[in-house]
View 1 (tube, rainbow, N blue to C red):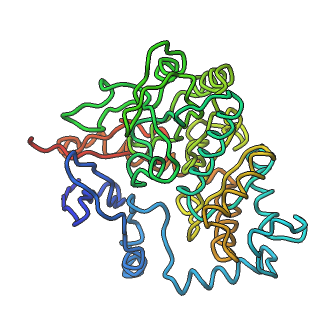
View 2: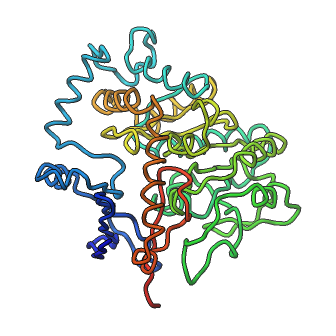
Length: 397
């Protein structure tokens, strides 16, 4: 096997290894001190290079969620999708008042809700908006039911997307505080997130059953466990290589939350990958323990953009009101919704995500037995738990 290492301007390490005719290119390598100012990749360049020769077609680019078509081809495929899905008219402001049988958007939302075993769903433009809406609804409900004028607080893993990539929107826009699950022993200051554990039931129990005063972030407010309205669990944990919380512990968290009057929310940006990783037969099985779920369509599903928030009927009715308040209830979301529906129909069938996990596992197996690769790369987790893994370059400190 021949190995070549290069580094891009984004600080993403690229490993190009040839093994048994397979070319492997590009996996994320997280640096302890590097600030990633952009998540931009160039799918156009990727699409063009993939047409150069047969050898390029064997490249697996692990930086991208899916292989992207050039813009012109993407728009052409949306036209075909409209015909296939029988989308013959525009949605208007979410079609809130429309007969679900006469609105393609409401049919899409209903189809997804049914697959996940939830009462209803609402299409959103972004995950950041969807999860902010969920946090706000749960916080207001918690304050009303408890009769307390509490500090609005939720709990999540310290690598949550809300903490790392949204410029503290939960605090600046929602006026909320956060409690981290786990403690400092889960974060190795020398190795960063390498080896960091997924959220565990013991971590959650330490918070929700605590008799001590808890200190929030970012404003360092003193609260009790009774002030926590929502527990957010990401499946899988993106920032630590796609690790999954053990499924029996997910059920344990759900039971604990119900007993404490805390809503259990799933950051399911990659829930399709998680469901395959758990070996679940249906998406409803994965969604079962949660009061609310956010899912993304532009990642593994391959849509242009789009997200959806799922829950019971009362929750989604209120979410539609909050979507309007957040400015996300556009005159029409047709291009994004059609792209999402098309991607959902094409990718959420026939064990697509199971096969992706198996393919990645085979690739990692090949690399793990190669001495040259092992001398410069460490995978975390050592074996993929879903169709995601992080590779860390071994370098002198």
